[in-house]
Figure 1 (cartoon, rainbow, N blue to C red):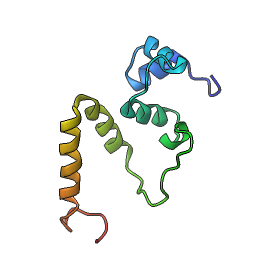
Figure 2 (cartoon, rainbow, N blue to C red):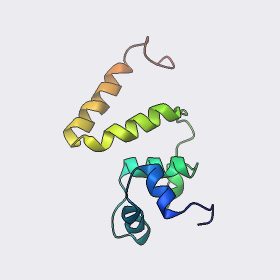
Figure 3 (cartoon, one colour):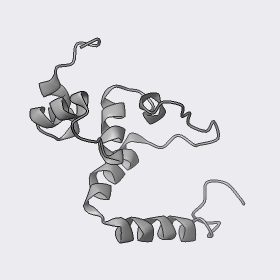
Length: 104
């Protein structure tokens, strides 16, 4: 409300139903990490702004919106084993100097 965004507009922007947004607001349903990333994007905020007592480490690189949106779209469809494979893959890819942003 403070920024003039209706529940309907938020629901459409993050790909859930209006009723789901109401449940998030009332605390009836937990917000998944992927949904939280989408909500933060719509509100142009950091995810850490919604997690009491947390702060994003200053050393985290900025990731482009396309990458974040793509991950947010696909992650909810993975079970815990699939997410672990993705984590392991990312770790393996960083062992290649040709694929890393920085040496090390």
